[in-house]
Image 1 (cartoon, one colour):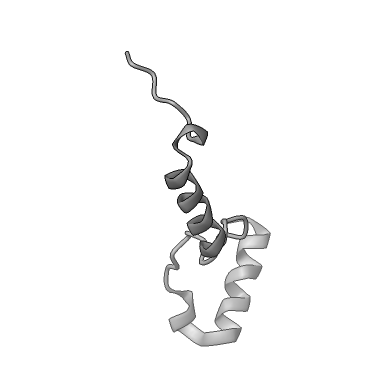
Image 2 (image 1 turned 180 degrees about the vertical axis):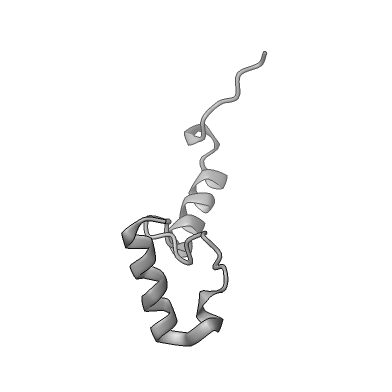
Length: 60
C-alpha cells in the first residue's frame, strides 16, 4: 500500500471509526460539466421546432 493511501485510511478512521473504512462507491456524486436541465430542455425544444438544424443520419 502506498503512503498516501495509508494516510487516507488513517484519516477516514479518525473521522468515523471502523464504519468509515467500508468500501465506497468510486463514481462521482456530481458531474461538474453537465449541461443544466433548463438549457438541455431549451436545446431539445429548438431541435424539435427546427428539424434542419439537427444532424442528418447517413443511410448506409
